[in-house]
Image 1 (tube, one colour):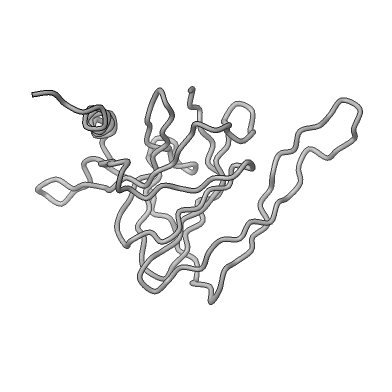
Image 2 (cartoon, rainbow, N blue to C red):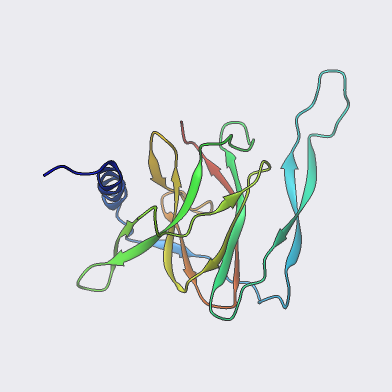
Length: 181
C-alpha cells in the first residue's frame, strides 16, 4: 500500500511540530471587540533608492476585520529577524491546535495544513487570521523547507500561544523570524 504525498507531508509536519513541547507559554491579551472593521496604522519598512531621501519607516493602513460573536481575529506583522524586512512569497503562517496530555498539560501542537487556520499576508508583512474558531493555538511558520513554532517575542524561550474566544481580536504585534527558505 502506498502513501500519498499530502499524507506524507502531513505526517512530517506533525512530527516536526510535535517534538517541540509546549510546557509553558504566554497568553496573548484580547482587545475589546470592535463593532465594525478596525483600521490600524502599522509601521512598514520602506526601501530607499540611492538618490531618494525617503524616511526609513512609514506606516500603512490595514483593515482588520471585526470578529463575529462566534469567532475571533488574530493579526500582527511578520518580519525577517536579520533585516526587519517582510518575507517574500513562500512563508505561510498557521494556527496549530495545542494538544494536551492525559494530565491536561500542554504537550504539543498539531498542524493539519488542510484544515488549520491560515493567515492572509500582504507585502508589508501584515498577517490576519479572520474567523478563528475558539480554542488554544500555537503560531506556526511554514516555508518550503521547514516548519517552526514561532517564539514569543517577550520570552523567546517560549512559543507564541493564543487562546481565542469568540467576538475578540488578538494583536500579536511584530513577530521577528529567523527562518531560512
